[in-house]
Structure formats: structure tokens, C-alpha cells
Image (cartoon, rainbow, N blue to C red; front, side, top):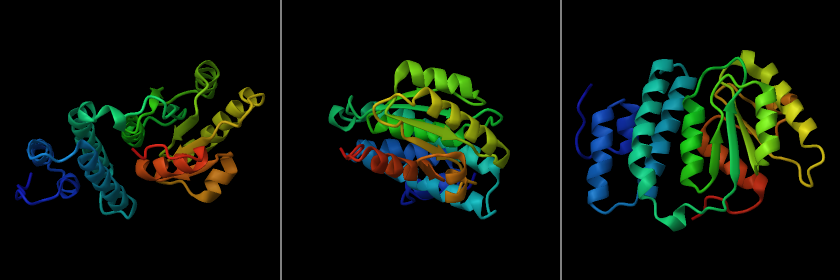
Length: 221
């Protein structure tokens, strides 16, 4: 890996795939008194930039995987250091899964980390998850929001099937369950087709969508 100077931002280091330098910068800046929340925000910025470079064809899937791994390691350092007020226990319950037929977990894992950092109790069902398992888990845990990840266009039918089944299972709830879908190939047209309440192409935007759907200041700590 190309070495980078001490003045490079964490986002720059993630885009450069410099794992060692990124983690060293995080530790150095923590020692200098910077807050974990600020450093997490920089990590998210780096991931967003990698996602955009992947979308425009500059980066390949290997870059997404590497950036996701750096983010995961950064989160392991930063999230335990968040002050209790920044991790409210009542932000809500969030179930997330990558739908049946899709085994990609990078975006889902980033979303899981981000929602956990913002105080949600996250139930991560993993990848290639059947509609019945998602619906059963929703039945059992009655979450405040459901997130479904799908990177492949071939998974759109699975998205639709999962959402249809969840809607059937939650039809008697006093309030409709907000369902947000995430993935680089998603559009408003796809969201409308599969029956989602909101959509995003990255985890940070997903948080904004969830805030809007829940109608409160979730995550504003």
C-alpha cells in the first residue's frame, strides 16, 4: 500500500485503502482528544466516497470489500468509546437483512454499525434471508423499522416478496411498519415497485430516511 502523510484525513485513507494508516490515525486522534462521533462521521464519509467511485466504475467490488473491512475495524475501536448519552437505549429496534438470493453484506454491515452507534437495538439476520424468516422475526420482535439490503438487480423480486409477506403479517398493527431498502442499484422506481417506504444507496442516507419516517430526532445526540 502507498504510504500517506500524517495530515491525510481518515476518509482519504479509507478511499486509498490504507488500512494501517487509517486505524493509526484514529488511535492518534483519539489520544489527541477528538471525539469518537466525529471520527465515525469521517469513516462514513470515506465509505460514501468509495461507494460513489464503485458506482461510476472507478472502483471494483474488491474496493468495497476492503473499505468495509476498514470501517468494521474502525467501528470496533470507536463504538465502545461512545459516551452513554450518544447511545440512547430508546432510539428504537431495527431489524436488518440481506434478502434471499443475495449474499453481499458490506452495506448491511456498515448500516448495522451506524445504527448501533446511533442508539438502535439492531437485530442482524445476515445474508440470503428468506422472506418467511424476516416476517417471523418481525412478528417476534415488533421493530420500529425494517431494513432490507439488496445489491443485485436479480434480488428485486425477493425484495418485493419479503415486503409483501411482512405487510401481510403486520396488517393488524396500530401503526404501519416503516420498511427501508438499501443498495447501490436502487432507485425511487424500484422502491415504488417493491412497496418500500424509503430507499437509499448508502448507510448514511439510510439513517436520514429512517429519521424522516420515524418523524423524530433519532440519532441527533
